[in-house]
Every structure is written in C-alpha cells, then in structure tokens.
Length: 212
Image (cartoon, rainbow, N blue to C red; front, side, top):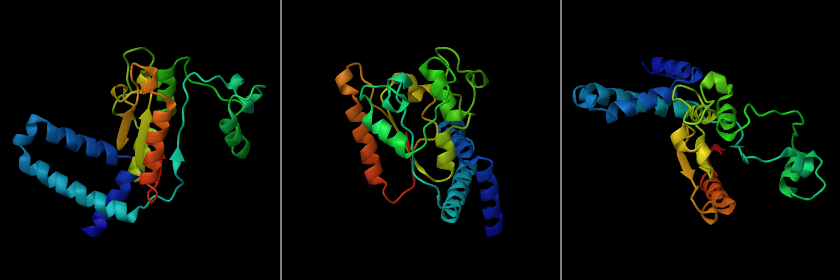
C-alpha cells in the first residue's frame, strides 16, 4: 500500500493535480453537502494529508529561490540598461549587467491585467478569456505560483496594484497574498510593499521560496 501511495503521488505531481485536488476538498468541506457525506469527507481528508506528508518527504525542492518583480507601465526606453542617458535605474541596471538582459521582449497586451495574466499562466489573453474589464483568471488554469507550490515551494505575493488583485484570480497558488493597495498613495508605497517582501524572505531562510 505504501508503494501504491508513493506511485500515486508521483503521478499526481507530474500532472499538476495536487493543487486542484486540494481546492476541491476545501470547497467540499465548505459546502452544505458535507453534512450528508461527512464520513467520506473525513476519510478523504485523512488520506490526502497522509498523501501530502509522504510526497513532501520524498520530494524536497531542489531548484533555486525565485523572486518575480513586476513594475507596472515601466518604459524600457527610460532605463539605463536599455540606453537611457539619465541615471534612473541604477539597481535594475546592475542586475541587468550581472544577469541576462532580454533585448527583444514583447508584452501580450497593451494594458496591465491581461499582460500580467499571460505572465503568470504562459497563455495568450484570448486563450484565457482575459481581454476585457471584469474578466479574471479562472480557477482551472495553472499559474506559476501553483506550479511552484505543487513542487513544495513556499509561495508569497505582495502587490500594490488593484488590477492584479486576488479577486481577479492572481491569488491562485499563493500560501499568502497581501495587497498593499490603498486609496492614498502614501499607504501603498513601494517601501511598504518591499518591506513585506523582505520580511517573508527573512522568515523563510530555510525554505525554498517563490516570491512575487
């Protein structure tokens, strides 16, 4: 039975089914149907928790820590690394000099929401149905955060833009999703957002992390 559990875990992980199964169980618990199938739900939960414990012990994250920093409406032609003469971006320029600079990159949309949705799912806006105001990233899509979480990374997001909020589907796969957006600019400054990100890093020194 142990060998069967390990084999099943591996198959589920390769198919990225860990997160969908977990979400389904959580929704089942929250629904009124639970009172009619309480015993079955309890057994499923115990089985799933055992399943997760075995899998986590057998599959420790081995990749690097990943930090995704996105800056809305930032013009490439106003960054020093792309030839701008004024010293507007010394830290970005330093990272570009030490790392890889993409000189031929294109956004998948002309505005924030669909462009960010494409970045998180690797799909075109037309494939996701994220082309208009009021649309959201639907639950069945696999985001980069869900992929990382399925591989047992600790996932955290801290955003200061309402267009990439949890209600629009960007929270999928994140253990914690904080929104620092407030009506007043001084309450949603870059310092507040950055300080929360740094605190997450400090609290997870012994874990593999995906931070957005």
